[in-house]
Length: 404
Image 1: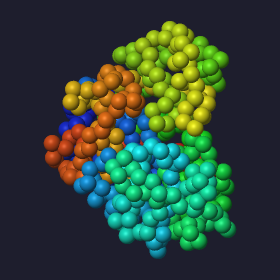
Image 2: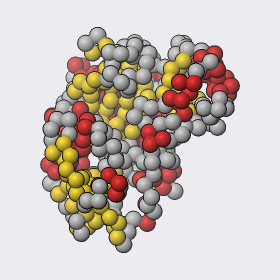
Image 3: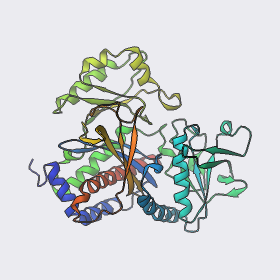
């Protein structure tokens, strides 16, 4: 099939010269959808193409976006909260329980500060009594020496309370790899993003199926080769890495995916994985069949001891981006489906075909808040923002299905 835009360079020019019409189109196709309160999207850029490789609906890492972009996030967060409750004043950020991760505490401090700058009274909250050591409030210190207070919340009459004060809105920042025992559907307090999208339910393959569909709409509208901005993938269910069950089917699907690719590197990822866990790369189906016990153990269990029994096999996109000579990739943050900043993740311990979200990774902030039509020096940032927006529209379709 012939496309008007069939190369990476053509797409970059198109993105900067048609920034307004592109965003008008994306706003049009997202109208009426439950766009996530916030999200982050990991993007790989090779010599010839781009592709989103992960989408997180409960993102950490707000501390890694630049101050200019944090200023944009202030207004966006206010808009998103007021969409649900125009009189909201008291906000809770429902946190993860891994509060010994000092970098995560930096993130919580930044997210709380941005939300406070939006004009709200904000408390970081938890329902995990084991975290609180019998107290209703604990004091923590982040990596950057910020003081953090975490409060024990309670649910009464299907509403969230902290220190006997009813919360008007809860920002969920817990991905529920370990599900919180609540009847979320019965709660009266607005909670966003929806708790039903935790990793106890969500599947990466469902996200990328929806991404494929939204990407196709976008590319049809502007006559773009859709494989300039996506990666091919397969799904394999009913796997037990520890018992070696399903590995033959996995190897067969690796072979089939490679037959559709120009390169041979593929990523095998836990379908419900997070924090860079449950990921391996292979060059051949034989590597799947020959994986040793150490690798199988790594692929078997993830965060909160969650056992992985389904994987996505994703086309490997060799990154062409480097920072200080090390391979790098991009993460874009969005609020209300629109970009509010991002960072570059690099890793001196890895090569350009590896998973960079692992031990040794470092972050480099960059600002995307000044993207305007026709500014060629912002071509990369414009492309990243467009791909992230498409990914977030795909996540809205996931949310629609989860809430049905």
